[in-house]
Image (cartoon, rainbow, N blue to C red):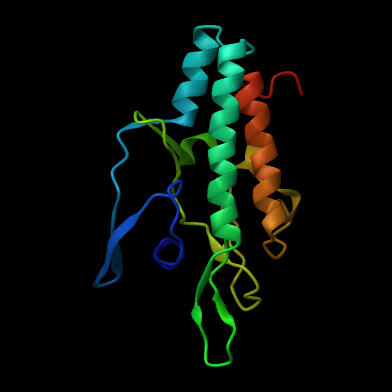
Length: 171
């Protein structure tokens, strides 16, 4: 999580202020987002029967656009120039896109959080991690295949269904 957050800067990704190791534990000091997570909003929208209204659909679209901006930053992050003249690739796959990992700030900003399952793109030596949230997991994650950008977009599609339908009941 520290490596991913330290490599990526975006207004739609939680900011990392400090990462320190204390013995075997890593302590991260991250940005505080004053707001609620997307799961809480979806539950409230279901309770109040907002889902499907024009206002809710516009709201959902605005949230979705900010999540796409965050994913674009994660998937295409570049660092400094290396000695060979190429830009250092700092791209990651988040691997845990779900409502509870999306914070909606009271200021209108959407932030992607929890990079605990994030893995660097192109690193074939990275051990595959089996952790995932089943309703949002891609077939590659379930089969423990190498991580790809498409895994995040699969999860994002599941999230869009949940956001616009209020759940997976119709599927």
